[in-house]
Length: 246
Image (cartoon, rainbow, N blue to C red):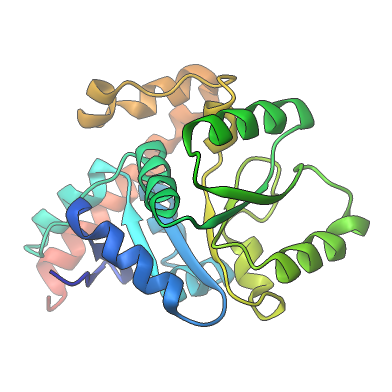
């Protein structure tokens, strides 16, 4: 079954079953130029409703996988096809496993030197057929960025995995899309932190219940204020249900 793209309150979201993920990744790899996969949270969805580089980045992404339960509930409420929800770290593992089984290549960008070193070792140990052809730490000075871009351009990795320390997050590859040759870019803030065991992975039961926000609040108490944009999301859904033609 092909990937289906729906629009939820004006933002694209893809419906991609785990069984179809491998074919989709290989099809994306075969496309020329810069490609991008986005792990879309409810907060990303709300942000993408407003005109910005991020909104354009989402609209032009090759694959948009929802990671928030609220996106599924919103789709159901508006009587649309309900997407498959992905655990972000599990999605990263699945994508790396697909690339590993096809002997593809990886470039790592982000995190501190210590975290990146340990994450690299664990990725090498886990994905034996995945060739790591480059890496660079995050939080880098602006002056070295052109060297990083040039290194990625020359290496032409199958996947560039970005993590914390990349200031522009998902927009980093999008704003530089014309400077790369042919790679998929995927940003997940906690990727290297989890691979290095510096950050504890959210339990599957917690994620399945949609309660991962509570562990985020424990790490950053200010995230309690995300309740306000969530209330706005519910309000927008009701408005779409009552007044917008689906």
